Length: 261
Image 1 (cartoon, rainbow, N blue to C red):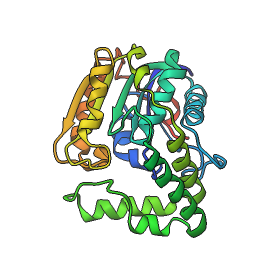
Image 2 (cartoon, rainbow, N blue to C red; image 1 turned 60 degrees about the vertical axis):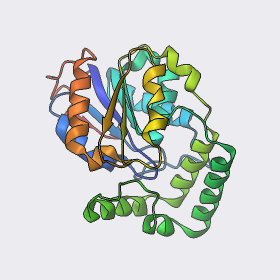
Image 3 (spheres, rainbow, N blue to C red; image 1 turned 90 degrees about the vertical axis):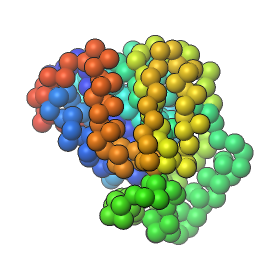
């Protein structure tokens, strides 16, 4: 049965949709929730040699239609934010609201592109073990050890080819900064003071470049702010949904209350 609007959660690199577990549990009884694995991740079909951000946005649009959502509030964190921005550009008619968490609109510098190519080559040669053992700083220095182990385990589960393809796709993404002015839906930009991968001063300008956007800064949390500061992230998301003209009493209108790709 089609529903008016739902909540769509796009995961970070190099994780899968399981990172959104706390948000799925918090919101699944309020409105339909779709937390999909991007191509190649979490057991989905291989994305090919390169998983472009626009191609991933196409996949999100397909899943929204398959879940029979007319529109969605799209939440993207880190790589998920890159995909969400590509989605906002290509599918504005499917967008009811936008949350850009711990992400940025600009393209990679040349050095970063080369680093991504080197990472992809090493993943294809060695597998994911080295990345899981020594992941990028996805959490703050004060994050619980158990959470770090969960993150490492999630990385270890992903196919090396999927992570490599996503790394190359991120390296090829265009600068979408000039597109921010064309976003016409309610938008929330979330950053966190403990994020050293995409620091607040990189994310904050988006809130000024998107018409009417809100900015929220979570104190202390690292890059995966939804996991390290779950209660605050969920509070911000719940308050934001109220500004998107979303009925938060839609539990049960989608099969099982949750859709997961």
